[in-house]
Structure formats: C-alpha cells, structure tokens
Length: 210
Image 1: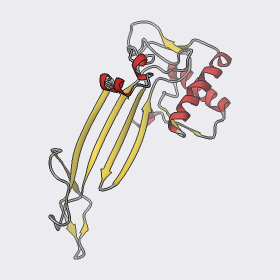
Image 2 (image 1 turned 120 degrees about the vertical axis):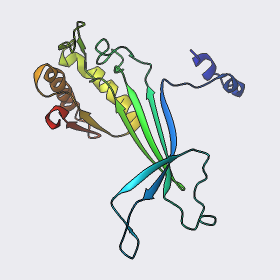
Image 3 (image 1 turned 90 degrees about the vertical axis):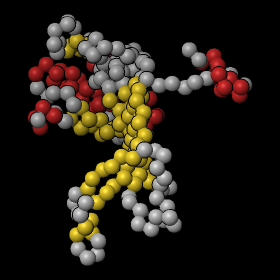
Image 4 (image 1 turned 135 degrees about the vertical axis):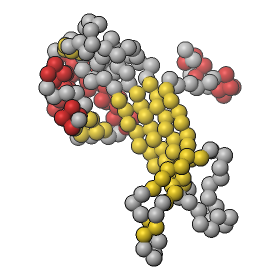
C-alpha cells in the first residue's frame, strides 16, 4: 500500500511512512542472581534464579557497582508474513510464487555489554502443494500437485530463503506415521531432489518423544 511512497527518492517521504508488523515484540532486562556459592574460590552453584527488571534500571557500571550482578538485555521479535496468510487447516503449503502459509520469523537477540548474539528461527507450513479439506478436527491432508510440478516452486521458495538467511537447518515436525506421513515424505523427496549443500534436513517426530 505504501510502495508508491517507499520507491520515491525524495527523503521527505520517510516522514509520512510508519513501518508496522503483524507480530510480537518484547524487550526485558534479565538479572542473574546466584543462590549458592560453592568453594572458597567463589564458584557458582548449579541453581540460578532469573529476575526481570524494568528497562529503566541502569546497567552495571564497574566504577559505581564494584560487585555487579550478571545481567543482559533480551529482545524477542516475531513477524508474520503477509503472504499466504489464513486460518489453520484452510491455508496450507505453497502458492505459485513460492510463498508458504503461516510463515513466522522469530529473532532472539541478547545484548551483553558491547556484544550482541542473534538467533533466527522461522516456522511455516510444509512447502509443497497440499491442503486439508473439511471442517472436522484434523482433516486428512492431500497432495494437490505432482512432484514435477512442485520442484520449480519449491526451488524458488528456498532460493529466497537462502538469500535471506544464507544457511538453514530444516526441522520437519510432521508425524512420520499415519495420514501426515504423506506430506512429510513429499517434503523429504523435494529436499533430496534439490541437493543444496546450504540446507540441512532433520526429521523430528515429537510424537515419539512425548
């Protein structure tokens, strides 16, 4: 909706643009308070408590706080894609442009002193052409296109993913038995056909670890 403004070279247009996301943002300062001290050299015990403080509390300054408690800033940001959004069971798999249903990117950042650590995780529907019909609980999935029809779109999807994230570890949580196996097996076959060294595929059936 704002592409006409963002594509303008006039810097004044920035003043009229408000970036928004559909998602979640939380920022907290976390203080680690050791409960026990083991040994004469001050080795911390294995038990710790987490205390969340308000953001206006100052970070520890060695000059003013000779014995500061370990603390860090924790930032969590989740963004849901506007592409192929929809209700659960009613929106599944890929579209013809390689967009995946219910795509959410979550980034966790930890700020400690001058260091920043970031971990990005995404979740989405299995990126093949599939759907679930009916209104009953957990309707049976079905494949809507052949493997050959899926290949170019599957490739386009991960081309965009690797452009954004460089490398990816794919964790397939689909149940490896029963009706869901149809979709999980189709996913694995597409990964094997793609043969991209930047993708690591892991199948994890959490039903077996429940």
